Figure 1 (tube, one colour):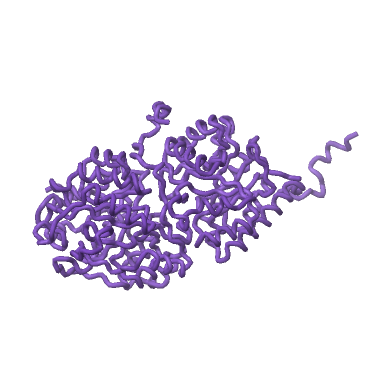
Figure 2: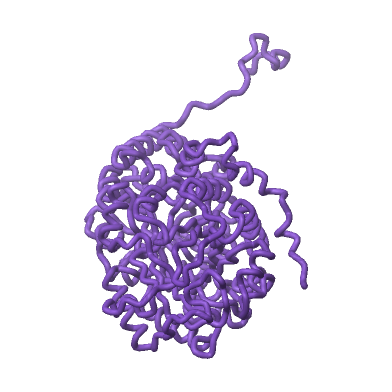
Length: 259
Length: 365
């Protein structure tokens, strides 16, 4: 079997689902089930212990096949993210933490400096640290060195649906990485998820594309199939691409026959 | 008299907005609505974040011609004491509210900074997110307020037309146009994470005010790159005091303005309060607007003391209960979100050069 290894956990599904932006919790749960996702992320700020109707965490925790990965969305500094990670671990019992530090609450781009700081501390504390980062190959290696479980480069701006605008950088990150690379943010269509998996991503994380679709459970299923197809293709090995045709009079004819 | 800052008169990047605001422009209202809807969906999903106002005090030292709480009105004055604030918070929590906006009038001895800070501390113990709409403060006061648990400051310029502004604000500290204009920047300097801007629609030429408001948003965004910014669209309602707005903004014009702001500011929070009717708010949900107030009581003590029928600052138009409001949102396939923040993220924001603080970071963690 082909498993995704993250920390001490193994997953057969390589689709990770985000849980924000849905029109209601029931639809969100249906989408999670339809996606077959075994790892889902939920923002600490959507944990509501006082009003269960407003709480995303409890209904997800009730799904036995799902592991929760709390995220620190809303944090603007390393200190805030570390604080949030501690609270999230206490509430969820999950060793996973998706580190999201975006000092600008409008465009939500990850802060590499604060993210590095938070990851260093949280990895030392034994979390399975999953940082959301810009597609920066050097930052990815630095995060691997300090013990992150995975790196999660954005395919394009979060919520933008611009697909794999950063494909060139993601290719370098994948080629150089010893830990799973998970494309997080920007995917709009299942075919983009297939492409990411064909490139060798360990998994993809999708939220808006499913939540904002007219029929989230169907879209979740489509992404699951697309991710599985892309992974299968990657494992099978894509035929090599050649940019030039083979000339009928070979350029190397002068070398004669190699004996 | 100090002169206007350059950013306020700089029309470099407001041409697109100006074109959309023109009712005779080529872009139809329907086309603007469709674009605003798509952008809102993309950025905020199928959700509406909710908050409720809590009037702490109606003491006031300023003479705003349009306001029911102006210092020359005969309105009975009171402020909530800590126990009363706790009772209000508890009544609000029973409604599911976790995100509140604390309001006072302009600074007075009865309701000054110390009173406000104490109130923020009390509110932060009970609520997930606390914002303040009060009086202009100093940078150090804002920093203290952030460290007491205040995340956001709402401060409307009311109108960016200086002449109109000075005529309307007849006396008191609010009369200083430039001081008011510089207040959001001071809040951000002090580490308040988010500022809410707006004009009080009806006081002055709305098209001119909208362009100035947009320039203010862009100026703050460029200067304070960490700043959260939200924009509200308060329209003059019948006020205690009976002020008739000289530049009334009709439903179509307000809708056009909201759509246009969503298009030029696709990831900024746009807010619509209970000053608008239930039908209007239902219609605008998701068409640009992503944040709304609910169950607003504009009287001091209005949540726990429902017996008294004293007059609020303005008349609430949408008086639906939380349940009624949420049902209407759900019928539109929009999830009402009560908690969209966590106190883990409270405290003052880092300055613009946070990298210098890295070596001190270990101690804070």
